[in-house]
Image (tube, rainbow, N blue to C red):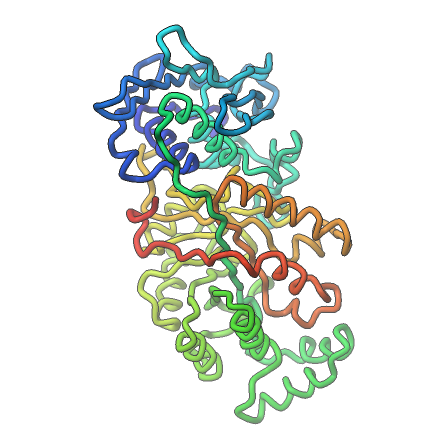
Amino acid sequence: MRRKQLPEITPEARRYAVKELARRAAVSKSFFEQWHIAVSATQTTVSFGRDSTARIHFLHECQRPGALEHWSEIAVARAGGFANGRGAAQADLIVPFSDPSEKILPLYEPRPDGHLTCRLDLLASIALTLSRVEETLDPQLDEHGRFPASSSVAVRQQFLERPILDEHGTAFQQAIMSLLPTWQPEPRVMRLKLTHDMDDVGIPFQFRTALAHTLKRRRPAGTLRDFLARLTAGEPLELTLVRQLAAISQARGLHSAFFWKGSPRTTHDSGYSPAHPKIQRVIEDLRKDGFELGVHPGYETFHNRAHLAEEVSRLKCAIGEDYPGGRQHYLRWTPQTWLDWEYCRLRYDSSVGFADRFGFRAGTAFPYRPWCWEQNREIDLIELPLVLMDCTLVKYMHLGAKEGPERIRALLQRVKETGGVFTLLWHNTPLIDPDYDGWYDAILNLLSSEEPYQVPERPAELW
């Protein structure tokens, strides 16, 4: 599916955007359920319950089918937040899909009747950004069929490393507090989701891979282990690295999710079977130790629902989970993938992160249910945005030992300030790759004090 213009922003999509904005403003579910959201042709009006006369009016401007015909690329406006005595105003709010002809300051403008008006079409911006509509507008793809960060407006306008929608949550919170002085928002807490994609586990045996342990990784014992594993009950080196990841998590008091493959061997898939007895022993030990088990569908499942469904079915049997989450191999993903995963009855996806740059691909670190424009509804799936992947640091961005941790620390600080989940992907094989020496420990040292995030059992339970 490829669009050349924006979808119609329906009343249902605007109500969805209000909910997502409220979640990022630390509004409780019980409080939100008291709100009344009225959508007219020109504005969306939010009121805060029977006992309150306060209103916030969100204008509907610059959002209509064909709007992109007037812009050379996706337009981005900038605005200030709402200043009040209970917190500093956001000085530079980013509003994609909005007319950038002037900077709006503040975004929330007081009215003579005591209400507030949001002067840009923030609700449309939220719905379009979360659903990654940018990636359906005749995108430039890389050699793996992926939409790269280098093609994104976030990189061109230098805000990929900011959770721009979560920052809007902070500004919206300040606006509510100006109208409802006695309201107390929920605490903002950053949580950690540590994930591992098991791309290679040393099964089936590959002579060149075993030899590489000595020639490239300076680990001759690993080569010997792989050869002996062919003849004995021992495990190849890559499979022992899965256990090592688990041991590291246990030693640090962290909780990890392990995503397993079950694809045939291809140029981009190692071709192991998760039903192999040696792999099953590791899976069972991880389960006994309380780790999460999930799926990592192969390269060829991308945009192939039948192939995906067949592979997911095998993986569910192999890991003993009926409703797991996971991530697409190579981060081969488009918005259509959400519907494919919903069809396969998967609980959550964590593919929405760029391979070539770290940051906030959907403008957020908050888990959320995506919006389907074609069916005008929320998808029965949770998206857990991926913030940082190991090979992004070393193989794509080529960051040094000084710059890398500084930028990661800045990412962490932004998530701490706005709330959300810092989702990290670390494969097993970098544990023995000299190019990654010291990186994992350095990152975990920054993260180890954070609370773990447990994905809800059902998407409908997400708040």
